[in-house]
Image (tube, rainbow, N blue to C red; front, side):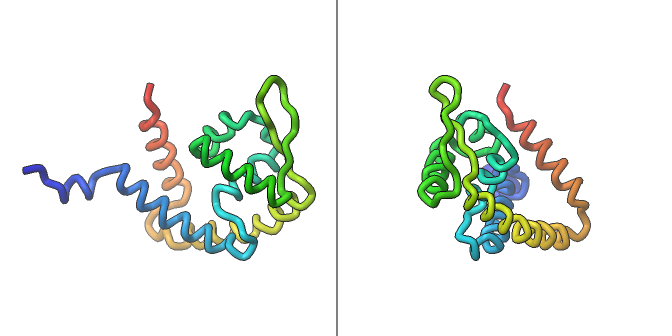
Length: 144
């Protein structure tokens, strides 16, 4: 019989999912007063940073499924926080509206509070080491 307990203790995917859910709850709780979800904050930040990438490239950069990105872009557009900008070819790009810029500026301090809360709870692990380990796992997970 397979040692299922050992698999559960060692499985990177299981630990990553559990960690992602818990981290998402912390950041979502911080952003909730503004009516923002974590993926929406990431999208607003990428667009506000000047990312003019296509939806496909933007989804890849943010680690989102393309359908999740498109659904969130639609919601952000309906809320008046972003607007589409014609790009080259068929690719659609977006930019922040003034309302979206104001929302992003209001969200950043809330994100910073959540970030500080997580970093303070790391205890025996440095934040940079934890991020380095997560980057290594992402890199190891890319199929060649």
